[in-house]
Image: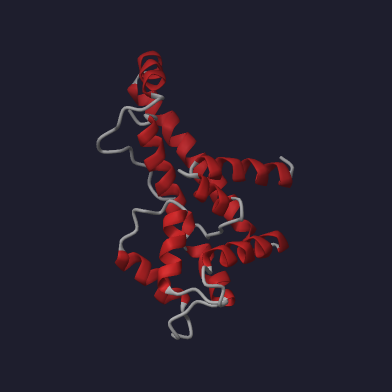
Length: 184
């Protein structure tokens, strides 16, 4: 598949994983992350919710059987995770650098050229990562603040950003899939 088409599809799928217009604005700027060498295990929600797609999923379960449907879900989730990974790998490209700059500027609410912990937390929440605990945000911030001055400058942001959203985008997609009834 042509690279630009693949990236466009990756961006579309990534955006569909995000819950709000604010998150869409951040996603289209090219939030980037790196995936671990192995993909996380695919598990279904402990308690599936009913959502708009529940009737379709239940019909598919009736036709395919539960085991075959679960195999299909695992395959789709695995492919979706790969697409997210490919999308976020653009961080090292010229486009990725431009996108990171736009994202950094959007997060830098006071315009001082640095991100404080509150700005980082607000940006993560705007991206839909509401599941992150304060201790997790603290850890992300500490990793990024390499010179330990209490702020993240653009170069620190560029180095850390690829490490954070990938796993969280996958978690967010799973949560949204459950909320829509895909896991029922």
